Image (cartoon, rainbow, N blue to C red):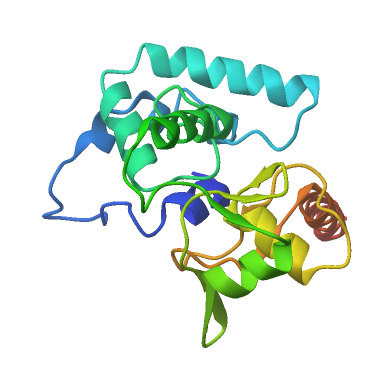
Length: 199
């Protein structure tokens, strides 16, 4: 497995070894050595990444635990990769539709005059982390923003490029974030390190 999968699923994966109870992941097609684990975690929006994403979704459609995997990804709010045949965008849209149908006032979108106001009202500093205490979306002017977008724009001097993801395994943390620029810089550093070590 790749380090990406460990990063995403680390806190949820059943421990390996003797005596471990079997669970749905043991029957997942993506666990087979016939597939490259990176296929489920495309790195960008180029043609090769999109082809990987489509191949992963197609493989999921034949997986015996697709529905269980999908439900788990939605319940644990997986932000990266293809799970149960759904991309991160698919899962975001499902959650958004569910919120718009909900009548629960706690789930309704809160409105703020500015991003800084939303960040100040809906975050709480806890040690090294800043935890989001609000819902899954806020409205600032006509824009609807995710907690990660609010936190990025409130604390950084540049507009994010692409989707904003969390770098932190602490649930609800909006301090440790990355965007496409950060991800590309990391990938370039990783490639350079690999090339130097291979030389």
